[in-house]
Image (tube, rainbow, N blue to C red; front, top):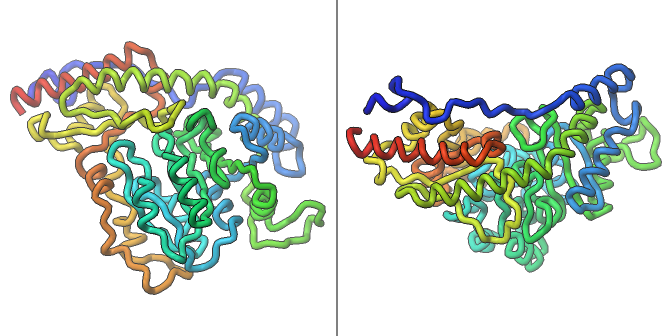
Length: 407
């Protein structure tokens, strides 16, 4: 391979650190104030958690918001509160983080994997309807990478079959579908505040909803089964302590002030990078124009065609691109149903029916995304400059030129 490539000792195309998280002294100050107050816990040490919940609900355009320890628990609370029973089937995509499916197992329900749309990598509504049975109780669409799912179609299917919709919006902070914030469209919307997310406190999660009864059940499950008006040692549901701290709440509240401007910059940079990469033979950005009025680019994903790069494998391409200074990754190596959890049925204490078998599941679009196509550029880069986006495109062109010459 040509020595001009950074991976072989050549100069990097872009030599810049894209910091994350982004913070300032006000973040430090608000957390320090809580530390000095000695009132760190929740719910008996102050109302900062409730204040942040109200702010986030207003931001999303939802009536209620409920914090919890992480995005996985947010999904679990929402699903259990929807009243699912052991053996119920829950439709999920196979191109997502493990939690989208593993929380279904934790609720003693059956994940049913439905393939993704090849143009967006979001769950395919047409495939959803084909997968519905009399045991289906809910759909968990994932707004993957911050790209809105086709929520009109999904909500129509849910209405037709009387199904619950729980939006996995772990990647979707600030993004919109037809002017509505992601998470505010289905029965519940679940967010993560883990370290890599567009809004973060290191860890944490949130559920938003407009359904008061659903909110009350989630609130009880989040708070060891307690209910409004009940006693401290009075427990109505098999809940647990999934509460966050005052320190997380004030940090998130302060970070939320920056989210609108950051989201606008991500949207602009992603749109501009699309315009650059779509001109490169063998590189195809994921499709836009499906109703997403704001894309928050938690991940920037493009489809890679190795035939236009002298059959350079996707894995090697991603490594070479990263060496050029573009923070990137090859994405998920396998669909979720190929994880040992599902192939070996390592369900342990969970009451998953014996008939469930994932060994024959095959979702061709997801397989192709994992093995051949998908390359991810990390979210912190989307807060860069227009010039940075141009350098990303330049790096890809550099690799293509070299690969066609002498790979």
